[in-house]
Length: 136
Image 1 (cartoon, one colour):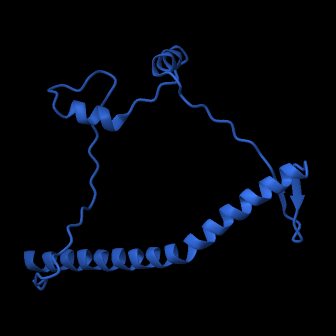
Image 2 (image 1 turned 60 degrees about the horizontal axis):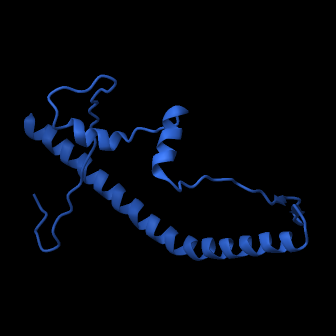
Image 3 (image 1 turned 135 degrees about the vertical axis):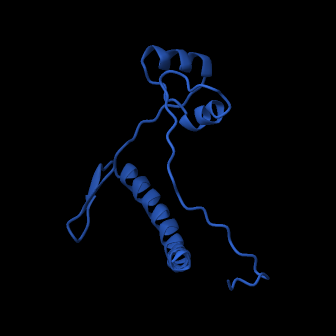
């Protein structure tokens, strides 16, 4: 009976392998098709923004009825880490890097208050070597 369940598990692993390969192939194909289109999109978008600025327009309507509206997104860059960190602490705007904490906590005997260690299972795939016989 153990052999039967091992066969079923191996079949599932083989199916997972087939699906991953098929997805990978499709992603590569899609990337080949989409990458040039995305580059052209970015160029045309930059040209449209420049043209709207030059014409002092905030938007333009297409033949299809869609409206392209020029928008401005504000971002903040850090120019002084010390002052930025102090400001973030005072305004509770600090994000804890849980990956860095995990690296530190893994060597500790006790998990610090305010944290918990959570295990999550996943599948890791080790690729077969090209010259290795894969029939088992």
